[in-house]
Length: 212
Ligand code: URA
Image (tube, rainbow, N blue to C red; front, side):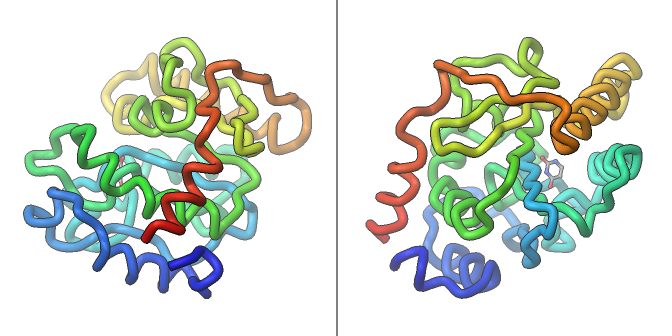
C-alpha cells in the first residue's frame, strides 16, 4: 500500500482500522477519527480518546474538547477550521495513558494522516504528542514555542487541554499559548530550529507506509 493509493482520509482510516495491531482495540467501542482535511492546514494531535470519544467515534468531543473549542474561538477559529487527531486511535481502559507499544502500533496510521493532509502546522497537545516530534524536549519547558521539525513542518508545543481543565494557572498558560499560536499563524513569530527534532521521521514515515 502506498500513500498515493489513498484518495481520502476515509480510505486511510478504513484501511488502518483493519490493518493495525494496537492492543487497545479489544477494549474500545470503535476507532476515533475525523474525516475532513482542514482548510486552514492546522492539525492538533492529542493523546488518546476518552469515554465520550469512544462512544461517538470522534476526537475531542468531551470536556477537553470543549476547552479546545473555547481556545480556538478565542483566536478566531472554529473546530471546523482545523483537524484533530490522537497519538492512539482507541480509548485506553480506565483512561490510562497509552503505553509505548500502543503508541507505536498506531504510529503509521497517524503518519498516513499527516502525509495525506500535508499540514501547515502541527500543534502537539501534551507530552505524548510532543515526544513523537521532539522526543528529547519537555512540554513544561517548550510549550508556547514553535520549531521546524526535520520533515519541514512547524511543530507548536502546547499543554494538553485536559491538564488545564482543573488548573486555573495552566488554563491561563494555555490561553497565552493560543495567542502565541495566533501570532505564528499571522506571521508575527518565526519558528526555531531544534537540534533534537526527530531527524529520521519523514523518511521513516514513508518507509513505514511502503512496507504495508
Ligand atoms: N483527550 C485526548 O487526548 N484526545 C481526545 O480525543 C479526547 C481527550
